[in-house]
Length: 157
Ligand SMILES: [Zn+2]
Ligand SMILES: [Zn+2]
Image 1 (cartoon, rainbow, N blue to C red):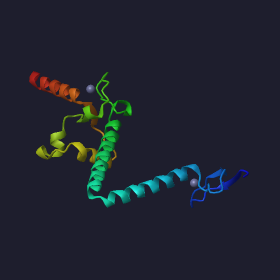
Image 2 (cartoon, protein in one colour; image 1 turned 180 degrees about the horizontal axis):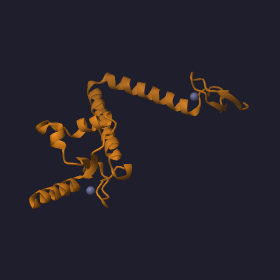
Image 3 (cartoon, rainbow, N blue to C red; image 1 turned 60 degrees about the vertical axis):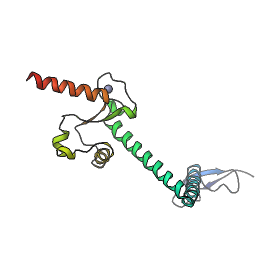
């Protein structure tokens, strides 16, 4: 069969490609997308057959979403926009050892005392608000170090 240049059969796709086989009607990126969609559908069917599998699937999915959210936020507020502690010369970039820090230590005031939020709800809020200023990514050691420095300063006053 001779090679002919054809238009991708997916509606709305403007890609053209060399057709090598008669049944090759989608461009590479659309083929990948279609395959992914089929696989996803098949997985969903398998999962829905078994309640235990279904629960496991949703738990796993929620966990992944949470991790991705944390990664997004901590990367944004990290040193140089990378997933890394903001402290000078600190090389810690382990997601499990990093968290968000209120630069001015006004977390309690801003969040209204004991209603202060942290973890996923805070990450979600920061992302929804388009990453407002006043936050930084710190490792737990440097959160601790910052608190020590703050207390020392209060003591001197
Ligand atoms: Zn296409
Ligand atoms: Zn650090």
